[in-house]
Amino acid sequence: MGRIIFIETSTALCSVALGEDGKIVDARESAQSRSQASMTVPLINEMLASRGIGAKDCSAVCVSKGPGSYTGLRVGSSTAKGLCFGAGIPLIAVSTPEVLVQGAISEGLVPEGCRAVIPMIDARRMEVYNAVFSPDGKQAGEIEATVVETGSFAALLEQGPVLFIGDGADKCRDVLNHPNALFHQCCPRAEWMLRPAFGALKEKRFENTAYFEPFYLKQFVATVSGRKLF
Image (cartoon, rainbow, N blue to C red; front, side, top):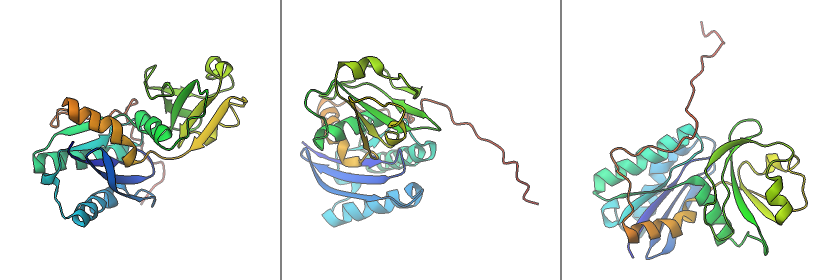
């Protein structure tokens, strides 16, 4: 089935993994603050060296494409593209919400009778990047930025249990005060891209490496500090 390098740097966790023939054989991560730029490549090099292989021995590179941290997405994207160009292998991308949903499924977090799984990626204040997925991982709506308030997702919550998962889940706990609301606070991990990535490899659903850009959802806005340096 091939061999895939996985890169997940869309949130605070820097995570990489290696999949062979549909199974994860190695996974490494760094939770050190803002470590994506300094740790992504070393973690990949250590992982490949431990298996006695190089990027050219792999079938593809898979990156989590966002939305999420602007800087993290840029690091993940540039690293993935560099590996693909250098090794002459294709690029696969999986949306970050799907990464979280696949994690919920693979970790057995989806409860019996669950009506929906909603990944929540922390934006600012009470805003999250989110989408609605079925319990078996099918996306049922567009990825969007939502300011969570009382009454958000009310229709779904009235139907039964809803799992909210991601690094934006906990901050919504008090606002979404409903007995059917379940929360799991976590960052997406590289190994959770296993299933969709190997599906894409089998079907040859590759990105255009030269023109690939992360999915930011909202444009990055640079601000000027009001503090005087001199």
